[in-house]
Length: 416
Image 1 (cartoon, rainbow, N blue to C red):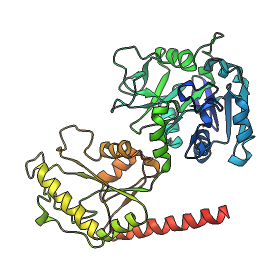
Image 2: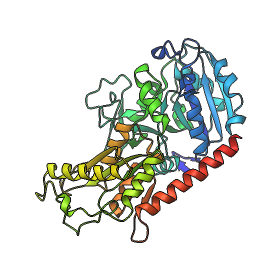
Image 3: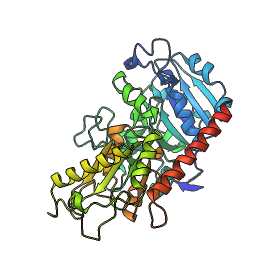
Image 4: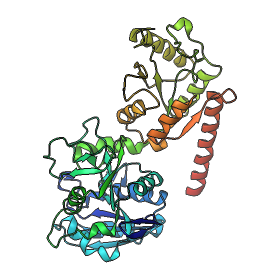
C-alpha cells in the first residue's frame, strides 16, 4: 500500500472505461452499434482493451454506457468468458462523462485505472504504478509526447513530468503532449466532480493540474484509435501485429570494429558467421526485419552518408541472395555529444520504426550486442536479447522461431 494525501491505496485491480457516447465521428459504423463495438479485423475494439487489461492483471472492469448499451452487454456479458468480472452503469446517451462517473461512483474502487473506449496504447502497468508511487499525487494521466505532431497537444508539463496545464479546448500557447487516458486515479480526484454535466477531463484534470496534483506518464509510443474514420486504417495495421525483429548492425550482423573505428566501405565489411542465415530464417518465418545502428563516423568525418548507403545496399543484396529481406534501415550519424534523440541508448530510432510500421513495441524483439542497445530497448519498453561471443544471431533466431512454433502449436491445441 502507499500513502497519498493522507490515505492508503493499493495497486488498482479495477478499470473504468468511458463508453457511452454516440460516436458521431465514426458514422456510419456507429449507426447500429456504440463506438467500442466498431470492428477492427473482425473483432470489437473493446475486445482488445479487455484482453490487455486482463493480461496486465486487472480483475474487474466497470463499463460506463449510454448509447445502445445492450449491444455491449449482450456481447460481453458478465465477463466470465473474458477472464474477468464486468459490471455496467447505464446513463443517458447524451450525458457527459462527468455525470457518468458521478452516477457510478459507488461502484468505483478507491484506486482505479480510467480508460477511454476509443484509444489503445500498449501500457506496462508495472512501470506506470512505479511512476505513480514516485509522483505521490492523486492523479496520473498517460501523455503521448507528440514529438511527431500526430495530434494537437492538450497539456504542459514541467521538468519532472508533472502536469501544470490541462486544456481540453487546446487553446493555451505552448501545449505539448496529448492526454490519451490510461489514467491512474484515486477517490480524491472524484471529489472534484460537479453536479453539473461536464466532460470528465474538464471537471477533474483541469483543476488537478492547476492545484499541482496531477502527474504524467510520458510515452513516445504512438497510440491507436477508433475515434475517427481517418485513424481506423492505422489501427487495423497495428492490430495485424506482423512479427517484427529489430537488429543492431555492428556486432550483430558484421564483425564490430574497434572502438572509435568504423566500417567505412564494403571492403571493410565482414559478415559474422550465420548472420545472413539468421535473417533469412526470420524472413521465411514471416517476420519483418529492421535495422537500427549508430554511425557516428559520418559526423566525425570518417565516411559520408553516401558511403553508408553503399554499404547498406550491398548488405541488403547479400541478405537477399541468402533468402532474407531487410525492410528498413535506420541509422544515427550524430556524435555522442550532439544531443540528438536518435543515438542509442536513446530510443529515437526504435520509435521512428514504431511509427512508420505501426509496431507494438511490447511485442517487438530488439537484438543487440552491447549495453547501449539494452538501454534503448528498456527505454522503448520492448523485449531485448543480446548477441555474445557464445550466442550468435543465428542461435537467437533458432531459439525465437522454435519458441514461436511451440506457442502456435499450443494455441492450435487450445482452439481444438
